[in-house]
Length: 286
Image (cartoon, rainbow, N blue to C red; front, side, top):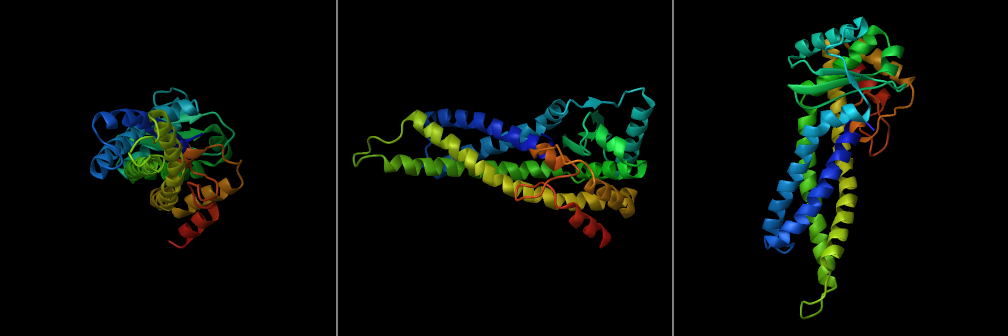
C-alpha cells in the first residue's frame, strides 16, 4: 500500500467520518437534499476539507505504511551519498530539500509525497537500490523530484476535493430520491436516520471508487511529465535505462495512493501509471 493508494484510502476514511458529521449537522441546519444550494455548500466544505486533510497527512502515513527510515541525518556513508544525490537534484529543480527515506522491500520502487514543494518526502526501496546502477537510481530520484517540482500532489488534492464534493452531493441526492419513494401521500414514512446514513455511506463508497478512475487518469498523465522532468535533470537515456530496468524488476508491491507516487505501477482503468513501454516511447520521441 503506497503513494496514491494511501492518499485515496486516507481520503475515503476522512470522507467517511465527514459523511457521518455531515449527516448529523445538515438536519440541525435545516439543510436537506431538496435545498440544493445549501447541500452543495456543505458538500464543498467537507469534500475539499477531506482532500486537504489527506494531503497534510500524506507524508506521515506514507512513512508509517512502509516503515520508511528517514536518513537525512544519517552518518552511514551510503545513506549520506543518497541524501547528497537527492540534494543535487532538488537544487537543480529549485525545490526545498525533501526528507529522504529508505524502506526495506524486494519491490523495485520509489515514491514521493508531501503537502508542498517545501515539505516533501522521497522514499526508495532497498530492492531498487540493490538492483539499479547509480545512473539508473539517479534517474528514478529525478523522476520523484519532478513530481514534487510539478506540484502533482497539490493538483491531485484539488481534483480529489472537487470529486469528493460531487460524490457527497449526488449520494445525498440519490438518497433523497429513495426516501421520497418510500413516503406516503401525506409525506409520512420514508427512510429513518440510520437507513439514510447507511444508504449515503454505501453510495459515497461506490461513487468514490468511480471517482478514483478520474484521479488515476490524472496520475497517469503526470507520469509522462515527471519522466520528461527527469530527462531534463539527468538525461533521457538515463531515464529510459531506469524504465527498462523496471520492466525486468519484481512485481510492484505498491498499491493505491502510494502506487500513484511510485515509479512503477499496474495496468487497468484504476492504474496510476501508464505502461513502461509507452513511457519509454514517449521519452524516445521527445
